[in-house]
Length: 273
Image 1 (tube, rainbow, N blue to C red):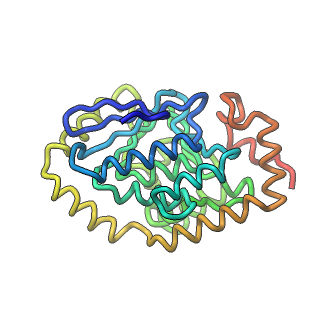
Image 2 (cartoon, rainbow, N blue to C red):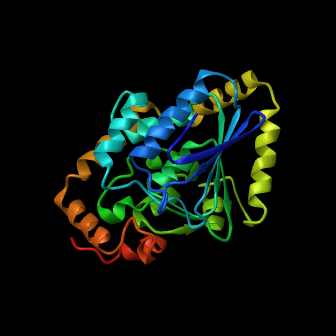
């Protein structure tokens, strides 16, 4: 299958999917379209038991959504989710038949964080990975699962710290808080992830599906909860305060490979009301 934003290669029953959407891997219309196609492929048969997501850009995994394409990518999400909701699409990623692993070496913020949280496991580079849910700093509610996943993974206090501070967190603290499975040296990350992916892919498919299904039944929020967050995000995007803050960020270089995207948390403290 051909994709616009994913470079794929197979190794037995493991599919390696490298995110490659210049300039900084924004989650936009093309990437959502590719995710719809990928999830459909994974659910159509048992060719792949494990999928590993990584990034072709060493500085950015997925920094956030493309804020100029919100309506467009939500419409693409509806092709699979049945509703114009990125959150419901990412929830479908969580329930796909394959085991999904995020190999993170770069910045993961907003919907990028929600993407990796939707994966079944997350392993990150200690030197380069940065995590954030910056929505509160703009005036938004995380709309694609961040609230649901982080509250369950971290507990109330730490989830509120992460969500309300809208700040950047390094991989070691993300590991300690339960945002990711493990932080490790960047040099060790690809080999470690490939090894665990191949190990899991050697086990019987039905057992993998049954175990994942039972864990999801305990830990994955209901579709109604994802829908509420998605609706809150959509409504807030029309708020004049949010629009002013978003325009200020775009004017300062948001969505380009410059200083703002490297230090997003710092920039959020100096925006117009």
